Length: 86
Image (cartoon, rainbow, N blue to C red; front, top):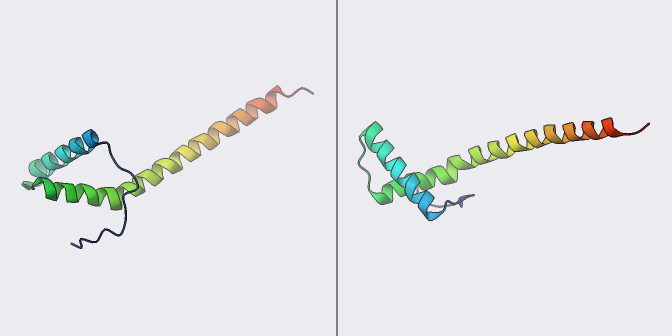
C-alpha cells in the first residue's frame, strides 16, 4: 500500500469522536475478520476511509440537502404566490 498522502481529508473528527471511531473499527475488524491490528494500523484504515470513501458520503449528503432545500423553497414560493392579491 502506498504511503503517499496526496489527498487531505475533507473533514476531521473531534478527538473523542476519532477515538470512538478507532475503537469501533478495531472491534469490528477483530470480531468480524479476527484481525488483531494495533492502534497505528487501525488509524491507517480509518485515514483511508476518511480520505477515499467519506467524501462520497459527504457529497451525497450535500446533494440530498440541496434537493430537500430546493423542494422547500419551491413550496415557500408557491405559498407566497398564493398570498398575492389580485
